Image 1 (cartoon, rainbow, N blue to C red):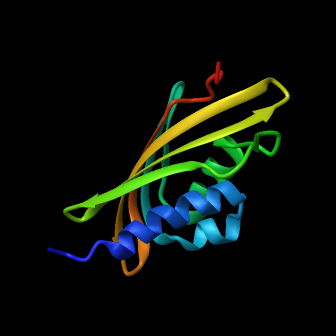
Image 2: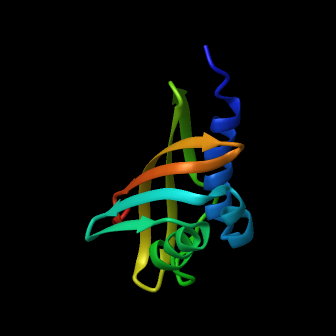
Length: 127
């Protein structure tokens, strides 16, 4: 059975960098030629380099006005050559409190994320 520890660590480090809003650390996780696709409620996203991914995640999906309330809930596992990481952020912005959940699938190459697919719920009222 292949060792999936490095890939599992990549998923956790991705969520941590997003949570901390650390663009440099987030960008360093991706291969130069990342194959990135994302799906949010109103749009699909594509990127082919790390700067584009960082811009999508930290400037488009989560804007500076969106503040996280505590660490995210995270769960992950690995199968074959892929990892799944699910994470949920709770926070608030000028529109009020929100919860947002994403599921990401990723593949690693030379210690970096080379392929990633993300599906997002969008910002929901935590009720």
